[in-house]
Amino acid sequence: MARKSLIAKCAQRKLRAARQRINGQKVTFSTRIYSQCIVSGRRRGFIGRFGLSRIELRERCNRGEILGVRKSSW
Image 1 (cartoon, rainbow, N blue to C red):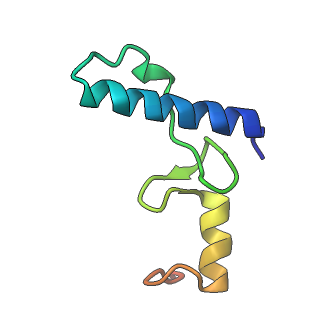
Image 2 (image 1 turned 30 degrees about the horizontal axis):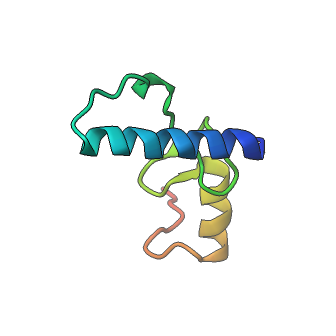
């Protein structure tokens, strides 16, 4: 699990970038903004459609918390 300070730092960067875009300024630090899981803060294995890492997504799907997702088998 990511440190809470890293999660907070990324959230602050996203807010600052949004403010700059609203004010029409150039976002100078856009490469420092990265996608991460909203639960665990994990950066690798991130599924953008759900906003979760692959591990959290699998656990929540198995518990039935995410509607419309089904385990595939072929």
